[in-house]
Image 1: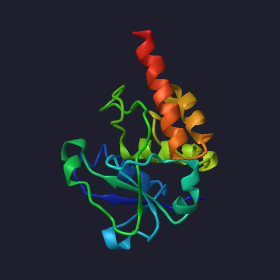
Image 2: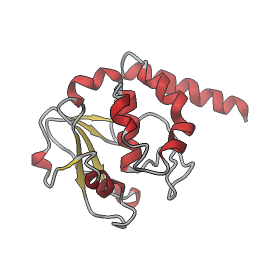
Image 3: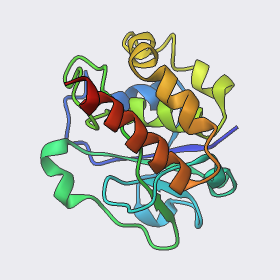
Amino acid sequence: MIPVIIHDKCQCDPKKCTAKRMLRFGLGKEAKTLSSIPFGSVVLSPFSDTALSPADIVHARKGLVVMDLTWTNIDDFPRVKGCCERALPYMLASNPVNWGRPMELNSAEAVLASLIILGEKEQAEQFMGRFNWAPEFIRLNGAMLEDYSKAEDSAGVVRIQNEYLESIRGKD
């Protein structure tokens, strides 16, 4: 089981906030301060040059950290010393706010995708009944997530992502 750690910047509508829902359903624990995030954890960051891959499981066992803030405030993304920042590969959002937008996942989508990439499918299953968009997320991204979960490392994930994007461009 991967410890999911949520640092909530309290920038979104509390009724729609997936970070708060994850906490309420026991799918994660809150880190009220950045210093309370375990050393060596994986921090999901849109600014990382390294893609999350199954090779990150060792660090993820210390913690998988999601920073919950709005996409409009993404430039204020907090940095955590002593942690491994990882970016998620290409996926489509399925939540009602960003449906179909590439790479604009909400916090719960990011955690769900990460757990699948890291091979923690049983833990990921816990999201299916808690978020009504989760089955749609799997429908949109399931094949990619399965491929990402078979990659050896970050370079493999990026290669798979690039092959997928090329296949999309080829259909235009």
